[in-house]
Image (cartoon, rainbow, N blue to C red; front, side):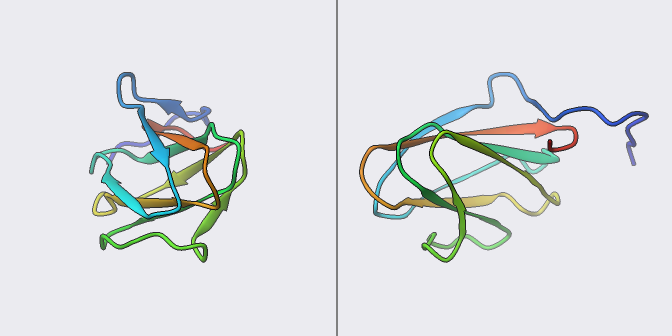
Length: 104
């Protein structure tokens, strides 16, 4: 397999960012199987809850919470391609991007 010779900050894959409106109803999407990381930016003004896994399912408030105006980086296996999200309230948006590197 490929290895990195030095620790590098995670970098988004160009043109992979998907802006998504997040509501109080769960919605879902997929990420590239070959992506090593998934970068999730909560660019909204309320908490969102994010699920990333092998099996497609609805997100709930029991999933990972991402506060407003913050970023989370998920390291994943090749078979992890499904994500879903739900918001605590109205007015949220996220950007989901494939990436590679080490989360900071």
